[in-house]
Image (cartoon, rainbow, N blue to C red; front, side):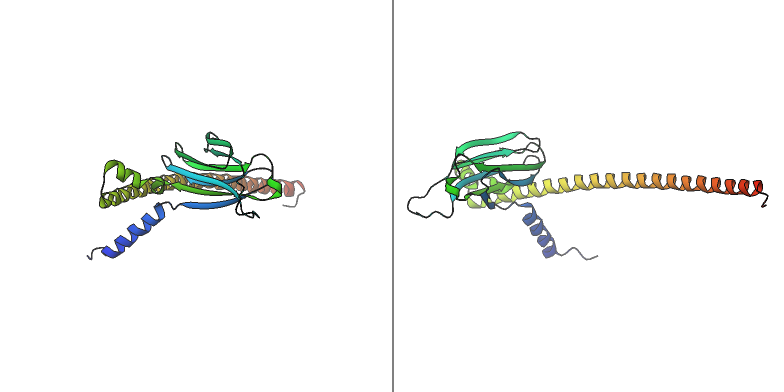
Length: 218
């Protein structure tokens, strides 16, 4: 039997790594004059998250004297807990490790006046997983060579892929159990419907026979 082609195996590994490695998410949000605007990210348990944000006015007339507006921000977990909250700031950073799987949100809104009706824009750099780690700082702290740092990146990527595979396996098991439970319910409903149809048919036959005999038609 022919062995599995090595180049195909490497291609699969690369694709898995590309799918698992989070890319730095750069987003610009134009804040409304009233209310908040949010970004959402679906994260797994124990994911490392680092975010930078800064506010500015994109259509400033005097570029030599830029005005940096103030904003308020809150980062919330799926359970509604505040992981980061700041008011009256022009820029800031948040960092945390997720304790639960689910959708995390970061909401921004204007603080104070509306800056003469001009639109306030917020730039957000959202990093998760391997991308959120400061590998240069780790290399300097532990006096590591470039190859060792790259190996650490690969190891972190492999762990992330393994975690994603486990998460997919758990989701598949959950969906399978849901499908089996649905099939059982449908089967029970079908049996009940069949039983009702049989009972109604027997009653109709009995009623018609009784009606015909009563009227001496049979």
